[in-house]
Length: 474
Image 1 (cartoon, helix red, strand yellow):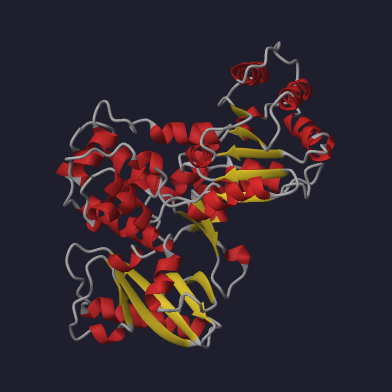
Image 2 (cartoon, helix red, strand yellow):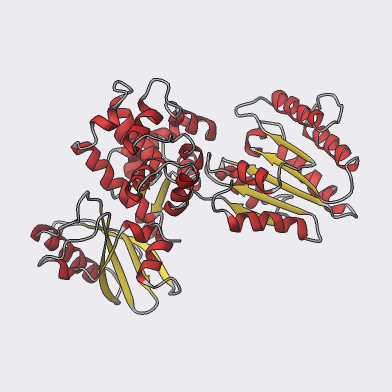
């Protein structure tokens, strides 16, 4: 059963209704459910389907392609190159029954080996043959987890595929609500606090959620997922990066530099210094690909130059790995249960909850009643000087109706009480933003918490409060 994805399913099925042949790219983070969605939507009925081999040689890729043709009933030899491979595919399509012919090629980026000229052969297949068919009956769907490759080689291609893509569908992680629906469909009996805790670890990645077991608490499930000797996700971190990137060690140096509890992020110059990588085009490509794949984000203050941008780790699972899994190094099979109330656990919760809030902007806008109001969603920071302290605001919404919402996000096991020191800190942030930003709108301070806010003497500084129930909204 497919949870959510109604819009994406409709877009896929609409490909069958078009008069012209269609070329659609489906992309998104690894394990997000792209392949499952496509197969379920088309009820596993394809004229041809094939999946590339991770880290395969050209010979292995071509052999696998031939094997996929054999599985469709076509007897043929192993093609010598991709031109021959697509010629064989043409023959198979010509022999297929009349009607729309859905061609599904999964993990296309893996098939692009050095000197293989896969893109050239694909261009020739599509431009020179598929679109020239009188029947106009081809629906070509290519899919891949290496989002940066799909973007560069397919969506933004400057060669023969330029302007040829007729559809693109980005599959994003589940929201909190969708994960709640997933857990209910699996009869997991999790409270919203449990779902939030698991979301802060697993993100909205369906593959990870599929390993949760009935009858276990959230903490017990985390132990069996990551810390037990036979845990299914024990080696997921290494596999995740090694499959996506050809030289993962350099990408991981960047990730490691961002992982050490650096809440607000660091500059490009700081990243170069800490990662000990050389500045230049290769380093820029690493940053762009990590951002494209959803592991990091690059942001600048709304009123400062992009040259002053900061980089921040935003992937839930990666953050959990560095702050929790790596520290245990698999020495305690019940690590999560045993450290549930530790200070390190609370540090991780604070950072992870902020990431979850940033991943649910539509739900936050809905809670404020501004879903239809045009907003500029950004972060804001001012570096400290000899005369003043620095200031950092992770979430700012500049609204077209003349207001700006300044957000604070706090994870707490109890209703959050605003103390005098924290109230002063909030007031100083508002003053800094008002004085140093170019924003002249009226400021509203909004507090997002897990269990609500205590209405004490300091509560009046808050204009609105949002709880996790609001984040679970549609």
